[in-house]
Amino acid sequence: DEHNSTNEPDIGDPTVKLVVPDLRPLSNVTDRLKHLDSKINLKANMAGELEFGAATDFAFMTNYWKELQSPAVQGVPAVARDPSQKAEVVVDCGMLARIFQCHHLRPSLTVCCIVERGLQKLLVWHVIIFQNETITYYCPVLD
Image (cartoon, rainbow, N blue to C red; front, side, top):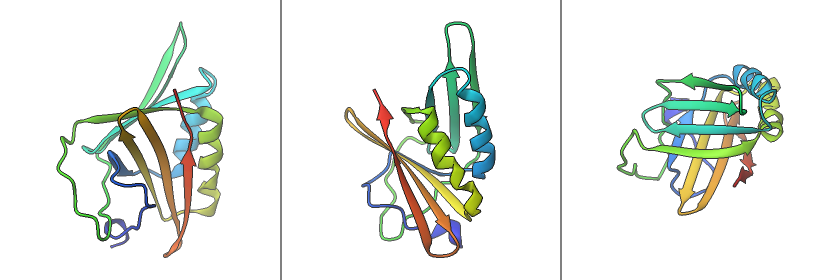
């Protein structure tokens, strides 16, 4: 099964790794959020929950996805973690919108990885096109 045998980029053990929904709806959400703020707050956990949010002094908007799957990584044993432990990153809305434009390639699977090591954070999008072709995006995380 393709979802159970994905090869993720070598980023160490991610705090959270989730198979995300189709990128086109994520792109549409990002387009709506960028009207509120130039930054998106992304939260996720291994319980399969993903949130995109943006806020101003007067309004906020958050989109939620639930019951997302966490793919197995070949050759890497699963690490025991509290599945409700949330990882959180803030990223530039424009950068995320550019990454999501790869939806035109009709990926068969997209995995979002958030790596937290102390104060260092990393957001990686691993996009599988066809069977063995992949594109990996390293999205800069803002302070």
